Figure 1 (cartoon, rainbow, N blue to C red):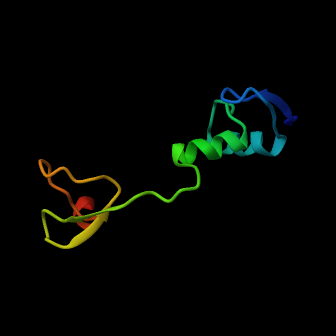
Figure 2: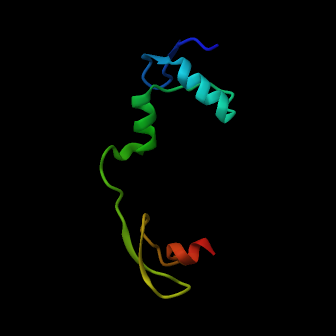
Figure 3: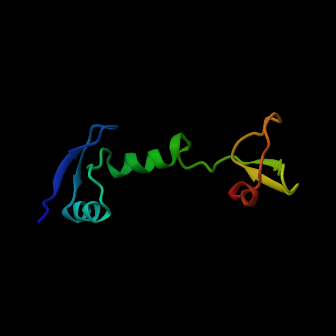
Length: 89
């Protein structure tokens, strides 16, 4: 039903194969667009420009419950910061 397709990565310009199995998976999930990036560029994009570096975390105090927590941004002081539990509420 599906045949392998050769696509061009929009980031690096290299050819990559959109396999019949991948096409079937996309169809099952209801995806209507073909992938635009090769696997290496998709992974790099998922990791952001950080590469393999771990995300820097900052200490903060939750404005709601007062617990100490770590957040992926530097708190500025002019906005409240919430721990993950309070943020979910």
